[in-house]
Amino acid sequence: MGAPVAPRAPEHSAQHYAQLSLWHATAGDDLSPRPPLPGDLDADVAIIGAGLTGLWTAYELQRRDPNLRIVLLEKRIAGFGASGRNGGWVSALFPRSAASLEQRHGREAAAAMRRAMVDTVDEVGRVIADEGIDAHYVRGGTVVFARSASQWADARREVEQARAFGTDALELWGPERVRASHARGAVYDPACARVHPARLTRSLARIVEARGATIFEGTEVTAWAPGVVETTRGRVRARHVIAALEGYGASVAQSRRRILPLYSLMLATEPLPAAVWDEMGIEHGQTFADGRHLVIYGQRTADDRIAFGGRGARYHFGSAIRPEYDRVQRVFDHLRRTVQELFPQLPELEVSHTWGGPLGVPRDWHASVVYDPTTGLGGAGGYVGDGLATTNLAGRTLADLVTGADTPLTRLPWVGHRSPSWEPEPLRFLGANAGLVAMTTADVEERLTGRPSLIAKAMGPLVGH
Image (cartoon, rainbow, N blue to C red; front, side, top):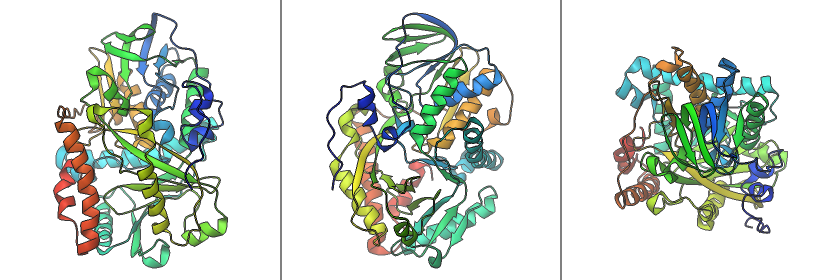
């Protein structure tokens, strides 16, 4: 059964936004758009984008200096993009592996980055608890099933490397602890929590507003420069300008080639009986995946649904972002088959919601935080889908940089990192979609040969491994 067909709501209405995803439909918020920018305005800090990067930055700036005049400029509504539609993993994952970070920045810097990511999982939980945010946060860890000989070899190697590196407390589970089909075992990472992403994002928006920030929605940013942000509704003059657009940076001319919008799609089932979850071996608070190269991810929601997603949707020429790309039936059918193959004990699944959206991919798969104290220009992004915790770390780091603080966060290796630009079209289109085909083929190669994929090995340096 596919997703139910809802009456088409007018774009920019609360009803329209409630249809974006399961998360928006259950956000505990009526999603009514805030007023747009009324005209030219002065501020201390102008933040472009009211997703989690922008909201965490505003939240942390208010903690450091409650008197700052902070303005957030959002084309749609707060949490419209990936911040409100993702898989709900508050994880310590970073787009580049620890080994890759060590090779680029040195062991000490790589270890500091890994420790910061692990600590951030608890930091997000602390803020949620302190602020009384009902975002269904439960730190249950993530289970990555190894379902072939090559995946099992990768799992053992990953745990060994983590132990040698000394920052991530990964555990190797044997087959007796997992219920996924063909599983030889799993890697368990305790540094991950389940969360309802739209509830988190919308709550943060209300909190920063209550403390004096202003969020202008329905306000499209067209360009920015030192001291000024140009929008379709007027101009904002500010000493500090922070770009927090993630994948949507590709829709603005001056950042079009800095980020590639890659689509990831999801589905949610109707709630399942507790007995079924017991058969699957997934507890509340746990997230799950397996070791394939074409990424999949799932969680057990607070109301016992499976929320399950993955890559597989193609990149669109010219970095195009359109509403129709959020829903590709071929990918939804694949996701449904995948989750039922992963857990054959499942009954016939009733799918209640399907959705998707673009995430942001830098050319070298290396997330970054940048800020120039001379110009006042800064930003963060390039999370490649690992943004729920990383945005919080980015917000804390940007707040330190903007206020001139010298802290361990401002010395992390992603601060000041500049990824190269993506190639012009059609090279960008050909390369991005060739990478998608390569990861799909790598999984087939491993199934057929029972050995680690040569294709995946060749692709590894290009995707942060």
